[in-house]
Amino acid sequence: MQNIIENALDNSFSYLEYRQLVSKLISEGKSTGHNQTEALLQYSELNETRMNRLEKTLKVPQELTEKLNNLTKDYIWLTISEGWCGDAAQIIPILHKLEEVSNKVELKLVLRDDNDELMQLYLTNGSKSIPKVIILEKETKEVITSWGPRPEPARKLIADYKAQHGVVDEPVKIELQKWYLHDKGLTTMKELVELL
Image (tube, rainbow, N blue to C red; front, side):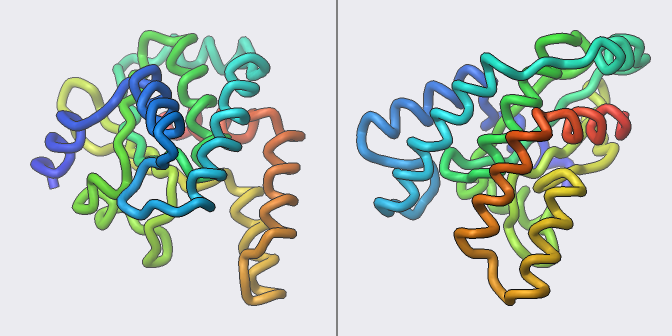
């Protein structure tokens, strides 16, 4: 497992590098990932707009900034993502904002399809659900815990809908995006900071 983590870190992107890669691919009519479809490209374009908005509007509460800055150890948030993923578009800017307000957290991003061995270690109910945040102690690279693919209330929203309707379709995806919009990243921030 340690080799898989080290390989992923070697192949990782900073937030800025990740954003530049996704933008470059969109300009070429592509999405990240091994599968290329018109739908994935459209999701990538929509997600880029979402991420741009979140970068401008997200605010980290002072209490969470203080908690992060009072940590006694440094951490790496090794995060599995893809540019077409709607949850990732909502979560990755939050991780970036937390990284910006603290020198105790470093965000490293890897693409799911290019890091299958890592993804296989962090499946959610047998599926390759992303984003997945793997929290490492920076000095030792020891895995502390993992989080994802979405905060608990959002997970429950999807699980309840799937239990009732048998599928995750467009109506619940719209409800999920509304939930993210109203939450303003606060639940995700709190859940992640509590893990440290």
